[in-house]
Length: 445
Ligand SMILES: [Zn+2]
Image (cartoon, rainbow, N blue to C red; front, side, top):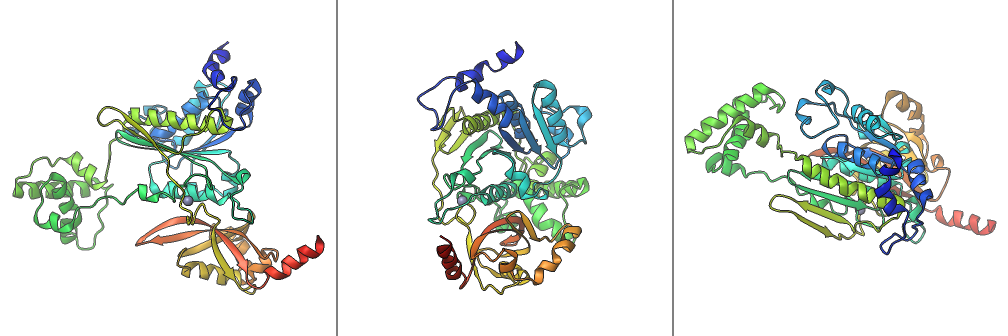
């Protein structure tokens, strides 16, 4: 009885044909049951968006969910991360969120993972049909995007093979604004194709801060970026140290009094220094609903998916707009992969050095995986030791003497002066080997 009423709305979408359905849509109760039984969805993040996503997906008929989040619950989360209670403070978000949704929605199984996204192997991510992102950082999105795109294979004409495509649904909110997007690697732009949508944060020019402050934020940034270093020669500012924050606040107040600028408060100081934008529960709810809907559409085909980027703005009134962005044909992440041509005698050690110097990669401390096998792992120590002996073997031999194939590498890449974890898909081709292998194949056929 409860189950029937719970699926009533879902049934309207899944049991009936329609004009806007996807190409392979076959309505019927089997579809609804299969969705519950076989669809596996990974939710990344169990914060403001993640809590909403887990609840929405569970109530949309998905029964096999996993959630990954590295954070513990803080008191300040409780106003919007509605799955958490005061007694949960200090516990892992993923574990509490999974437990709470399972208590309320019968028949749903949610597996929590309390760890960093980089700690999971590629195998882990490949098990899911759809990956839904409820994250607040560009770096984490970039990483997951690279992971999902790494599963994409291309045929010999460089056309993406649809059966290897791992769909992603990405949500994001900032105050009263938000976005929901569908990423079908190889078919719609990936996160990296449109990385320009996330411009670097606006910083105030130092000369303004030093000479012509006009706002309270200018005074705070002066205290934070200039005065702190002058007074504390060499000691790094720690935004999480209340004494440091108090010092910046006091210095900012003095600065503001000097220039007759009102409005410097302790909480504004925290906001400016830590670049905090208040989180709004209703924005999370709206964006999550859009993401859950797209996930349902991808999994069931009950409607064509969003094409491909929805923006929501609730600052004044309510504006929703969908923009169709296009793929960057040269994208290093969702394209066929960076081509690295090598002599067949190149050792794995030399290959790892090449990655560091390659202008399109600049990848240091690389770990190398081929077809799910670890050729060399930098960490953990036990894996490093197990794979170390491969370093002096030719990569060509380690890859089973194929003429060319896809290799996955993870490491640290430098963008400007920033270092980020990075995963790359490389097309490794061995010089002078192609002809031989082609002849063998021809002879066999
Ligand atoms: Zn791309």
